[in-house]
Amino acid sequence: MRPHVELIDEVDLLWHVAEFPHANGEARQRNLCYDEENGAASLKVEFLTDWKRTGGLHAAQTEWYVLEGEIEIGDTRLGEGGYWCAPQGTWTPEVKARKGTQILLFREFGDWGFAPGGRDKANGDQKAELAICDSRAMEWYDVVDPEHGSPMNFERGGTPVPGLFIKLLYRNPVTGFYTRLIKAKPGWREHPLAHHPVFEEAYCLDGWFDYNFGTMTRGQYFFRPAGVRHGDFTAGEKDGCTWILRCDGDLVDWYTENASIEMKGDPVNWGEGFPLSEPPELIQPVRSRSIGPWKNPYYQ
Image (cartoon, rainbow, N blue to C red; front, side):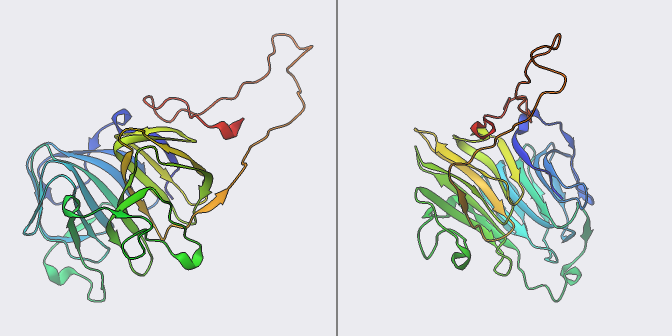
């Protein structure tokens, strides 16, 4: 399973040779989050030369989001904000990328495997279709809009939070798995801690916001497994915050008020009366050199 990553700045991560079998060209990747059991991953990819790969089938559900530069998928050309998703079993046409292009690449349910070939390679029982869109040409919708808003299952308790706006890039109508852009208005705030029955991951595209794990700014990322409490959100007062966000099912918010963690115990070989001993201090884990220690008041 994927590890909990929160927060990480992508500039602190090593570049690796990109995992693109059967491709022509050079590319490198930074591993934002990597499942060592099945190869699922979230990656920052940079193309060092012009690059292309013939049509075929990915082993994993595969998604690309263009951060800068230009790609072509089949007959469609996409620049910054371009997105495509090939669910498992969905044939993908030839893909090209220009030198210098940078993308976010998400693999789910499988590794980097790729079988080149024509459309006859596709699973005949696979009903999912290739999704392609240009997010720059899409409108922002208020998350509380009943027609276009938040992809939540309201029968299970989904609660849209005012002050957020979305562009829905992809959603599986059966599982609820979705990828969307989400924008918080300047000064947006939400205070209760929340947790969800699904994983939640995000990469910050612009602006910043504070929450219980620190301050998230452009180029920073988290992957949060289901059940991890988080919250006390405050978006930047000037520009708010925009990020790409993914969940493996319909998002349901379960809120917690007045949360605290308390640690008690009796000293054994430290404290008053013992030489060279001092009370222990809270050690906050550091996940990234750029982020520094977590700012988490709930450890107090």
